[in-house]
Image (cartoon, rainbow, N blue to C red; front, side, top):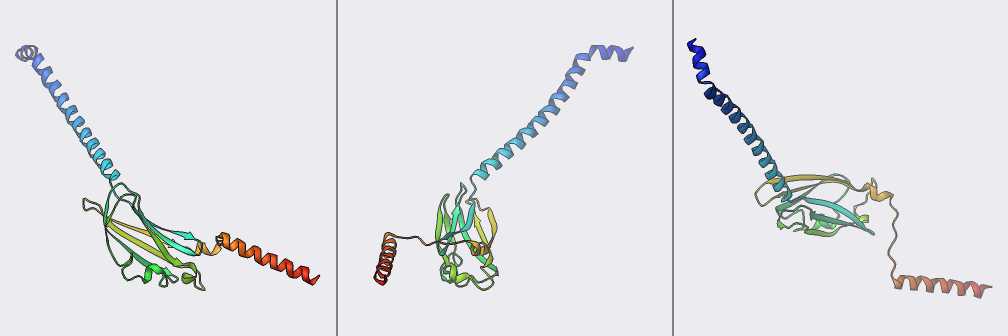
Length: 192
């Protein structure tokens, strides 16, 4: 009966003890969830401030234009670009020939939305009997916190071979063509 009396006289304390254990357990679980949410929010915030530098080529009549742009929201630093040919001939390109060009230097600061563009090559200079070049552009850069990014883009320029090209005509070109047509009509009329 001693145990029973002790149990009845200490029921409130025992209930408080069990309740304290439950509170401590759920507080720990809640703290862990809050910490994970804070880490996820920090990671999301940092990813929105990351630079993202891309490289691509555009066709401009008979020229191939090179473009590099920071489409991210952060500043890229120490940007370097390297070209690795898989097939074809890119050595005759303007970009490849430049001594201090994009492949031989480091861009110290590349701001968000900043773009570098220029003529990469004449299409006729890079075309061989086997087609157009296939190569990989590797780009390396850091963000302002020192994180390093390494990206690689494969380019197969053989899609150019299947496209039909027209040359832009100026008003002078149209005038010259009309003069030639007029002259041919006169020649035909004089023969009749």
